[in-house]
Image (cartoon, rainbow, N blue to C red; front, side, top):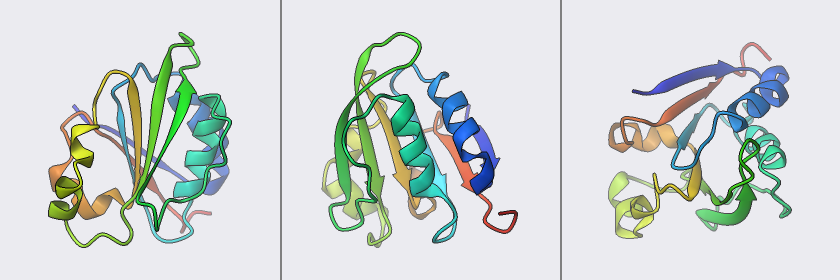
Length: 136
């Protein structure tokens, strides 16, 4: 069952904290919204709650960054996968790179910017987070 969230820039700090405390490992967060709507800002806020020490930037040219992280509730060590699909053309590119094999593993949390490009290929348990820049 998918979880749906819709938020504005002002709501990002609170919602990121709330979501971080619900994570157990294996979750995929599909971040959907226009350019500048808050996808990377949300990822940075979430990363703070996951105790990520590295600098979070949108991996537009790298496609994916991986960070060691820690779940807030259990302090369990996980890997945080941050993907940016802005420059991808279709799902077959993602699959050919083997990225889908990393999704949903119990020791990962995956945040995917521009996930609407592959929405029909995301697992059923994906959390959909829509950024509404019109309310900002």
